[in-house]
Length: 433
Ligand code: SF4
Image: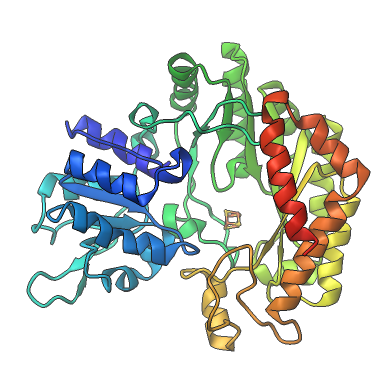
């Protein structure tokens, strides 16, 4: 998404671009290297994530080997919080902190070398070799947030998991005003809700429908439903224009009500994902998320009653977690009329308050990769291994019920069956391990 929105700005400046989603199109390093040799870019930028950080950073040496004069730059939440980590790799020239579009644009306008005035940039001082951190960049105004240039990349691999139909992401809002201690979202897009004008967003949907024949969308925002007035205006605009689309979105349980969800459904919402996090109010309290189990029950029930599919996201191993609270979480997942449940392990990503807390308390395992599918913390009385085992158990308990299996089957469309069966085989092997 960030590469596609950045591409949009760079195209306006007349740059010639190649945007490649390597994992999606199955491009391995050898083929990427061959492409880079042919294309000979002046600049190469890519996104990084905490779980894949080492590989992501090592890509720089590979790019330089194939195109020695290319300027290399990375972005993402981890390197925003810890730019020095990226700059310790001698093949990385630039670290773009927070939302990347305008900073990358200015790097490409300035060329290599003259980077002192570029806000939001960390780079290696040409003389001393030490890291330099320019001041933070102000975030883009909502009306200046570009639409992604999907035409610049191969979007054919983007298929809805259970449907197999092509889909695209549309991002109407950036920023999140909440302060959940485990979340990196505000680090990237800031704490202020920046709402793109509704007409602009719905125009983008219509353009995608016309240009790519796509009817399915993921309306992506950290918390799309944070502003009810906006969501209602967005839904009404889709209804008024008569757009026959279907879409999904993320939400907080304390930001929805029956009237809003009905309108969203009328506008094409077929599934909503709630960050439920925990089934224990004391654990929820410690996250700073400011939601309760009762609110989770209310929101999921209303959506279910309206015929909207629901997906619940839970985190195991948060501060204050015990065997009892993990069982509370599993019980909540089993009691709610959820169609899908995802159980993650709490990951203290750099830049979060959970990271600071884990460091202070000495919870962090020394040899662990920070990811949401393997516990990286040993909490008092609850070793990470136990959290991992409980996570597998929770998945088994949730999905091995006939009702849950039927819910999934009822959502699957014929073209997605092959993919689902392959995923299911791998999943069952892992969950029963
Ligand atoms: S978990 Fe959701 S509500 Fe909390 S900070 Fe992250 S995006 Fe915002």
